Length: 406
Image (cartoon, helix red, strand yellow):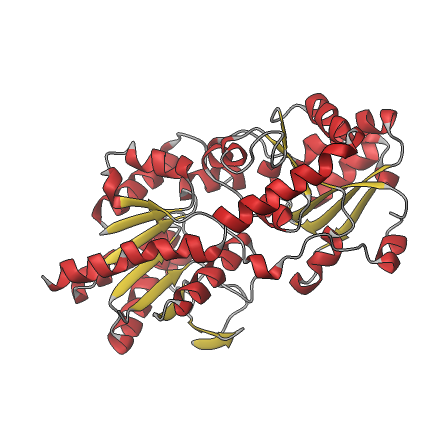
């Protein structure tokens, strides 16, 4: 069945984030199924002043920034963004005549999709990757269960009740959605996955890069990603002096950047471990594999909060796909991905001493490494690949189109 799907996105490539990489994977996999995909981004696409552009073989319609007095006002700025997205979405939808409108988080994209879908008679799917209100808490723009938080939560609940189908990335979010009074049959999990063909097992370290970063002959712990507060990298730094007492050859490689970078650098100085921590800054996506190849254990110390308890991250899957050792905090999003002592190890979230203990035990028991690496790779190959994940849309789109025709 040939299907035309118009995706409505917060932002996309060439910007780099877990959000944009998931989007690109979904679009490419849907095209392999023979579907036509079209793509519109909201005014939140940064550094973009064109109405259309093609990036890595994917063509995107862009939405110009919202204008007027509302743009600079709290709350009103979000309304202006919704209005701008709605106007542009209607233009594009009338042009391409899609069979399905597929809005992706946040709800600022779902509301325009509902408006246009109702006006033009097009079914709407809403994919929730995280709840906007929870992300706002971490970014410091909202207080948990405050007035703004509750208003945003109400808007999300309104959207998921009125769209034709809901998809989400993990069981934690699915349970939260169903608890809001949404029929379980309306919600489908399209889990995070990896393109297994892009990841090879057992890549050898780049000797030149290893020497340049001072990691030759060292035991390397690593984190590769964005430095958000909820990632808990401060806990990893707090654990480093404890680990160095037992193993002075440990080094910490932090690849990426973000809001917390300066605070982390200052923390490393205060702890007296600045010479044991290597901040590489952000690196091109094409070079990330070289940094993975330097790491013995990937550590993901996410803090416990609604966002991390509900949402599964992508990075541990990428590490397992490369046959890497994974140590992670025991938040819900990690427990959904990692089988303790089989595909990785877990430590108590927010507990530097437990992190140090678990990671040191893993390092000391190298005879366990081959089995853990193999189990992680097998899990990704058999359950967490994009073909399996995106294939679940075959149970959603055709049914919605048929219902609308009736």
